[in-house]
Image 1 (cartoon, rainbow, N blue to C red):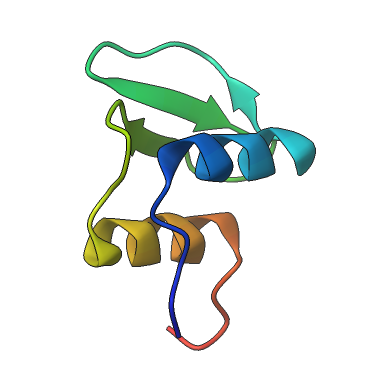
Image 2 (image 1 turned 30 degrees about the horizontal axis):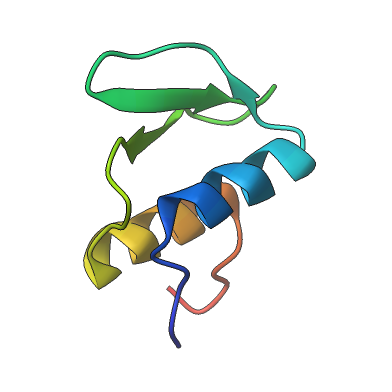
Length: 64
């Protein structure tokens, strides 16, 4: 399964789904009640493995 690698789209989806940007330095840190924080690198795109990790943490990937 291919996961989104464009960080703009990843961040937009996180925010649509109720994740809140709470800061960060080299990465944007997103939090949602009852969930561990998700760190999104500040690049235009991320590697497929990073995209998979974000998808898994956000609950988008049921297969992993």
